[in-house]
Image (cartoon, rainbow, N blue to C red):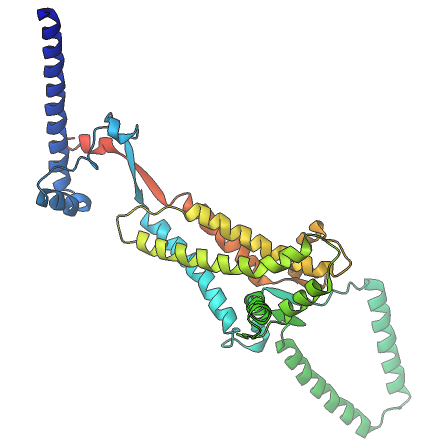
Length: 349
C-alpha cells in the first residue's frame, strides 16, 4: 500500500511541477509580449481582469490548443488589394445603374454586359485592288474627256467635305449596334415578378434584354434547361452583388483590425459561379424557342467582342464580372499569414 501511495505522490508532484513550469513560461511570454506593440493592449486588458491570457500564449504541446502550434494574422496589403478590386466590382454595378451617363456616347457601350455587333467583313486583296483600279481608271477617263464642269467639281468637293465631317461623327459613335447594362436582368425580373405576383408593375429601369428573355420563356422553349437559366440569371446577379458587398466590408476591416477574417476564397468562387450563370443566360437566350442550348457557343459569348463574329455577344462588362472574382480568389490565397507560437520563446535571442 505504501508503495502505491509513493507512486501517486510522485505523479502528483510531477503534475504540480509541470503546472508551475507551464505557468512560469506563460508569464515569460506575457512579459515579452508587453514590449511588443501588437500585443500590448491585449496584455493590458488581460491584466485588468486579473489573469494571464491562457488562450493566446499557450504552449505548443497544450492539449487545449488542439494540436496547432501557430496562429494567423491578416496581410494588410493583400486586404488592401482585395478591397480595391471589390470596390471596382461594386462601382461597376453602380455605374451600370447610372448607365455611364458621365462618359461620351462612343464610350458608354464598353461598360455593357451584353453587346450586339456587326460581323467583320473579310475582303480579298485582289478584289479590292481591282475595284480601286477601276475607280481610278474611270475617274481619269472622265477627267480626260472633260465630263465634269467646274461647278460640278466644286459641288463634288463640298460633298466630299461633308462626307469627311460625317465620317468624323461616325467614328465618334459607339461601335456597337445595341448595348445592355448589367442590371437589365434585375430590373426586368422585378418588373416581371411584381406584375405576376402583386398585379402591380414595379419598373426601376429599362430592361429590353430581359423582356425579350421572358417573352421566350412564356412562349415555351424546346430546351429543358434554358428556361430555368433565364429565371435564375437575375438572382445570380443579386447574389453576386451581395457577396461582393460582404467581402468588401471584410477586406476593409482586415486592413486595420487584428481580427482574422475568413471566407474570401469561397465568396470569390460563388461570385465566379454566378458570373458563369450570367454568361449561360445569354447562351440560353440565343437558343431561341426551338433551338437547343449550345454549350460550345460559350466561347463566342466570352470572346466574340474581340473575334468579330457578330450578333449578340458578351461585352467587356461580362469579362469584368468574370475576371474580378478570379483576381480576388487568387489574392485570398495570400490574405492570411501563418505565425508559429514559438516566436514567443525566442525573445532572449
